[in-house]
Image 1 (tube, helix red, strand yellow):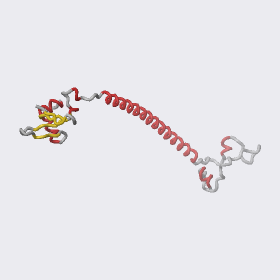
Image 2 (cartoon, rainbow, N blue to C red; image 1 turned 30 degrees about the vertical axis):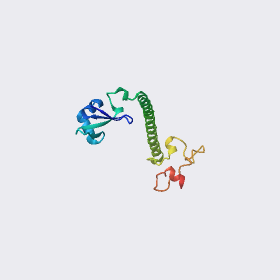
Image 3 (cartoon, one colour; image 1 turned 45 degrees about the vertical axis):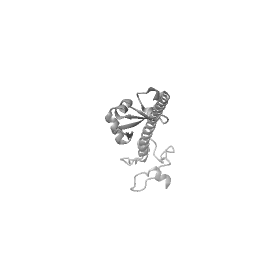
Length: 171
């Protein structure tokens, strides 16, 4: 039968079979726990192996069981908190993805716009100026004429391509 190794410290000295019954596991599981060192064993004077059990782990003794309800409730509260935190972060991550997608789209649009601004103006096929083709008065003609925009530089020689705005601005 079982002997109390010490009632003050809550340790119970039992056989392997009784330990298996009290813990709700098989005898093989008790032997494996002894091998791993998770259960202490003693050799009795009769040569039998006894297991020292913590009485709070004894499934057969209801008085030794601790009321786990406060611990379970605390764990439930923590799980609820973590679920709310996970939901909040999921929403935040989705918002960041939308912002990044919007910035990427804006970047593409600005890149396209920059290419349009830097594109060279093709020369007209004939010797007519831009104003003559548009039907406006030619420079130096009657009515004072429309002048070329101020930001356009006169084209010199065979260059024929307008400088990009940033080169005109910084030179």
